[in-house]
Amino acid sequence: MACFNCGGNYHNHQIVATLGRTTTTSSMCILKPMGFTLRSELQPMAPDHSQTFGSSSYSRKRDLVFIVNPLGANGRTGKEWKKLVPYLRSRLSKEYNIRESLTSGPCHAIDITREAIREGAEAVIAVGGDGTLHEVVNGFFWAGKPVASQIKEPANSTALGVIPLGTGSDFARTIGWKNDPCEAIERVARGLRSRIDVGVISGEIGEHHYFINVADIHLSAKAGFYASRYKRFGNLCYVIGALQAFMSHHNQDLRIKVNEGEWETCPQVTALCIGNAKYFGGGMKITPNADPCNGKLEVVILQNFKWYDFLLKMHKLYNGTHLTEKNVSSRSVLSIEVEDISGMGGVYIQSDGEHLGFLPKKICVLPAAIEMIY
Image (cartoon, rainbow, N blue to C red; front, side):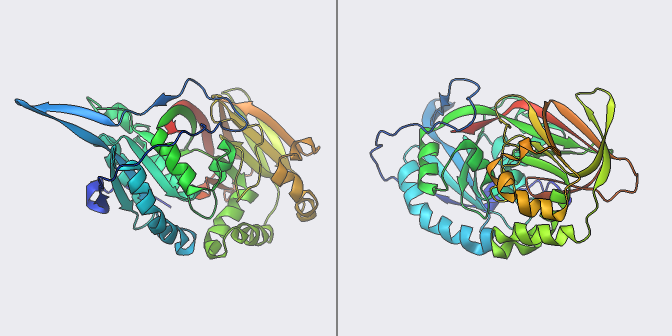
């Protein structure tokens, strides 16, 4: 699905709510991400910002922009968000302007994010599932570069935040976060930051697409394409999508080039997954050694799998022990190019559950690309 920048100002899409209620912040333990080490010491956000105009000066509260897909998870995201808003306002509005932006369709979150960054927001928080997070991450970039790098005099660095409310929260699983929105609000209140890596996918015509979780090729990507039609069934949509994809699936010979090296042939590839994080497909630990803070991507290749292999080994795919199988390989990379040897086309690729077309593609890591609220 092609996305275009509407150029709209995010203030045109938001409901602004600021309450003067005072709350007492209780002492809390800072959650430690599971499975990886933070790249550097966490730094707190600075909520207050002073500006001077002529002879008068005032203290201006910074903006927290919450981007919500109200139709996510069959409308459950919108309903849960409405219940959450009063607590969120009472917890955060003393120090920040709370700005709520409801998306109206595909790619809207990308445009809202870009405008928020250009206008100096303290943070943009994706509220919903991995689809909303995926769009917000893409909004941090424009024309192949970070949006912040294209601002002449940026007031501050806009951070990325997450409140998981959607169908799947696979990125949150990698970090070790519970699917608890109140806990997520406490993370925003603390405002601690650390930089994370982002993957970037480029095609033959030079377009760029970014992902924070997992990009995958062939069967799993085709299954994801079909699964998107059945989101109303929750996580069951992934099972339905996989069954439908299997009906027309054939293992394919692919060529790969790792880290700008020599081309090599991978025969009978069932699926090729490139992980910045560990999980996809509603909790499947497909790239168990991936670490979004180590400056590398993990590539896992499944070869010559039959339909019954998935039935027999499904539990291993979910708990991350499938790397011990003889027809599964794994390696860490900085970049990988993938081509269809047959030249017939039709080999699917997706990232974070979003269909991106077909091979050939090149996937690279952008180390420490975005500041994330932890």
